Image (cartoon, rainbow, N blue to C red; front, top):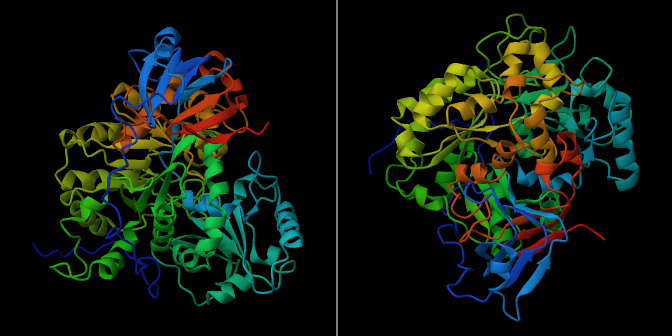
Length: 597
């Protein structure tokens, strides 16, 4: 094997004293999904008595579907399908409801789910009750009164967003210290790219006025001082969160059913763990080994974990511990007990609502600390990113790159092009978010076969903020679904859970209306029709992870992954989409969630 001199993005870019965790797929992966469909198998279920939305162009609407061995064996008229039944076949009467393919989560953070049930919700409406700093303190106090954490025990909250509080400033450690002097507090930024801590938190991590701001990071300082005020973002936050005490594996296992119900209760049958650390992967493997998953989990190992990953799991590979072995791709793309690794996650910039994305033109409102001509920043320089991307391309591993700003998108476009990739390679390298694109970048996506996973919920949650920061023209082209569709680019749509709720119907609504919190339409010409919105969460999302032959539509041979809605989304007013209810969710023909009676 030829020697490799790749320098992977590492925690030395994050904080000089940090150490990379280990993670890799010298793992139990590589075994195929158990064959649950047998030729000639007896029909186990027939679904009938409602509308079947197949998301198949040839037969978009059907009356009945037959299932055997966890797979779909026939789709068609009720008369034809019922003729296949035997005495043992269960007949599932939809009673006028609508059956759709299960939703596919094209980007999110599943490992937040087992923890979020133990955290404080400090989100703004409609996700949480917060509208002011006083509300944040009140919600934390309610949590303390209920849980009664011991002195020194961490209090974790999620959903902090300065854009929804009326105080007109960031939350400070001074707002938290008087109320919670005995406990370290961390409130995770709504972008998942930062946090606010109180003084006890800063003390634990040894951060004070002498702590330098790392490249690619932000530490908000007190006015007239170098003392941290509370907010940390990007590379200043990553090592802090990585070293935060985590629940034990058993504690996570105890909440795993509730975590999966966050997805299954919304009709999602495939979830994504979109930035997987070593400890997270080890937990997921244990859960898979114990057959704890009732939905599929797609994991993306985080690129900054790879050097130590190889050193820990594969120290005897020829060429040294920093080399990605030629056989690495064998660990990807195959399910084992409903868990698979699909590709590698490469973050290039931060959060547009947190002003840490990387743009080619300055923001109209300046930087987070009042900087003029502010364009944000990349997490890693291009000279680090390009050879890393080339290495993954050469080893046949799919890349999933986080890029919000157009300058960050330029970085991955250049790196993929320099790696010699073309659309004919059918690699389906995914650019997660692809938020603030330029029209010319869509042509590069066509040339290179890049596929965007859009995030249209930004139009609602932060559309007004983006218009103020970038102007209506730039904001109007974020998540440009129509322009991508016109160039025959396949795309998905995601929630980035827990950045926004796991709510496919709200996602559909946002891509159709593109309305902000205040009712402004941002990018009217990028509004899509309902079938496009549905495809972006079913068949096209499945295509991005090379699962279009088994998921994303209702057709013979595919997995019997279904969601039952109380009404047909094609027949309701657009604003009524968010009022539809999930009645039941099926994974491979078996019910995994049902609305309580």
